[in-house]
Length: 223
Image (cartoon, rainbow, N blue to C red; front, side):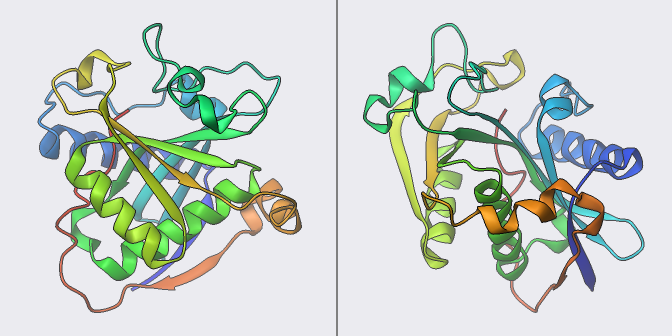
């Protein structure tokens, strides 16, 4: 099966992604009333998709971040929880950081090969956008799996073993652990920046290999 990775601007592709995340979150996270439709964070963020030839969306994730001086509140933050206060040693006032949210992989294509391929492109995109840290909120099981996946491709991934308050009422009954990936610092991402300024030019070919089901990915992340 052939597929490509794209930064989505096409409304039809985005709608397919929204429907996929809604269906998976409702079924796999046990949130029957979850609305996966577009929100303000989608409109202001960057949505990375894996798209099969023919237009089927296989996976997606939203990147929404803050650069020094922007003063943006990330989707996981609320009045009781701010990342800068929770991680004072990261000096987030002077670093660019983001949140990976609404991460989903179609159950029909979940395998380690595909998940690792999507993660690599998500890291590439995040690095190109200039972020030093990428935060994700999920449960303990998925956190450990993501750490394993990051380490397998050479990235540092750290889990904070303290629960945080939910920023969305839909996810209030779920376990919330915040983890983060550490991306390379400096100018290593600048050379790729032009690709992401023109998402229509971005076509990363991929192919799903033969592998067992990715049991621990499920619908990905909360928030």
